[in-house]
Amino acid sequence: MMKGTILLGTLVALATASARAQDSSAVLLAAARAHLAARHMDSAAVIYRRVAEAPGWPANDRVQAWVMLGVVDYYRSGDSATADAFRHALELDSAFEVKSLAQFEPALADILTAQRARMFAAPAPAARPVSPTSQELPVYDCLNKCPGNVAAPQFEFFPRIEVADASVSISDRRSRTFLQFEAVVGPTGVLEPESVIVSGGTARGAESEIRRGLMQARFSPGRFNAVPVRARVRLRFDFEAEGTSWVKYTYRVTAR
Image 1 (cartoon, rainbow, N blue to C red):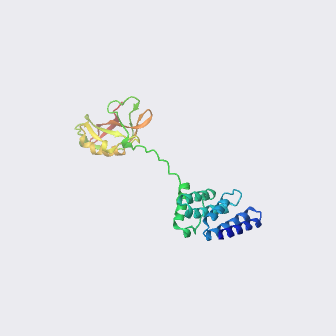
Image 2 (image 1 turned 180 degrees about the vertical axis):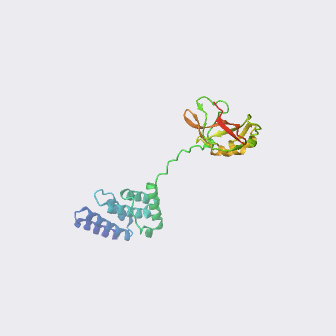
Image 3 (image 1 turned 60 degrees about the vertical axis):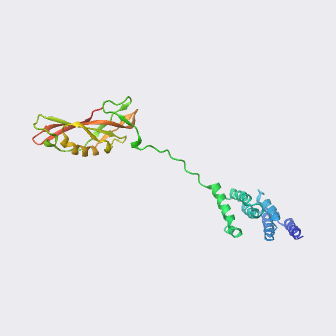
């Protein structure tokens, strides 16, 4: 009997309400709240859904109706129905907030938060392709002759160093000697320090000075089909007496 009385009162209110859409939705929402307060869940749900699904009525009222339908459905049908109602509300206004939602039931606020995250979470950034480090690239053997389509590295810069006669074992001005290294020149034109080894020559006293110079040296890198690559080469230093205590030197990459 009580339900019938309330429903009749709602219908009377609707019949006398303004013809404007906003007035109609406001009256219906007030009636639905009265049903909810009286624990008439089914009646409240019917009215909330009517407002929520009316495309011509104010968006704010429709959002409120969807949210409150979600509250009612939580008690009537469970979490999935609530999540569905909240989804419709978020489709109308993705930024709406209902600070008092947790007062009905803390789980309701959690359902809304989860639904918002599911609908509007930022997409995960696309995985960036991982480029191999220079140490992971293949090494082309240019110790004697480079493979086909591979051009050997060449010196672009070597710092000036001073080499004494004694360090290169030159006993008279007509003497010559040499020192030869093997090393990998990386695609940036710099030697890989751990790859540098002495592979021949008699001027061993000059090794430390030449090694220090090689760490500062710069090369045009080896290229495979015009693309910079790692290449293993021989580096030859030739020494010749100059004056009474110093020698001059020349250097080159011996690969062809």
